[in-house]
Amino acid sequence: MVALTKEAPAVYLLDDDSSILKSTGRLLDSAGWKVEIFTDPNAFLEQAAMHFPDVAVIDILMPVMSGLEVQTRLRRVSPSTQVIVLTAKDDPSVRRIALSGGASAFFIKGVESGEFLAGVKAAAESSN
Image (tube, rainbow, N blue to C red; front, top):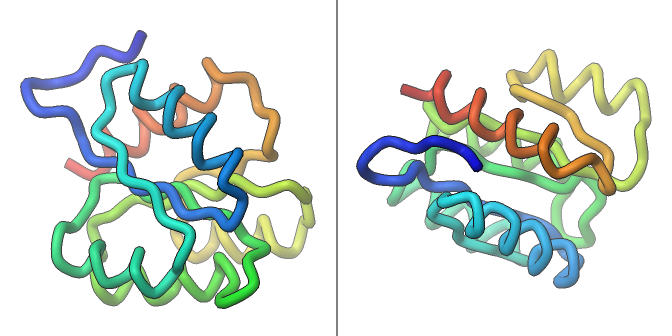
């Protein structure tokens, strides 16, 4: 269980796979995080620009806009939001670009839940 402050940090999830959103959202919710889920990158960015989430968990391969493009745009609209990449494919060049672009962590889908939650906690702590 992640120890949180009085108000749970907000975590936004963006993925085109509803089953990933559902399972990851449940995991974060059960650990006490305030979770919002999105399948549309534009809606995600619009909400992030208004609410400045602490952490954003972003997939890379999506049909409308790549996760790397979302990450770049997110930096402009919510620079304090920490980005974690959660993707199905471990592509070293994509990993390098995401991390050099400021991502706090890069996880492959299926990552052990404790490791993932620790990454989200570390990212949330660095956003404060």
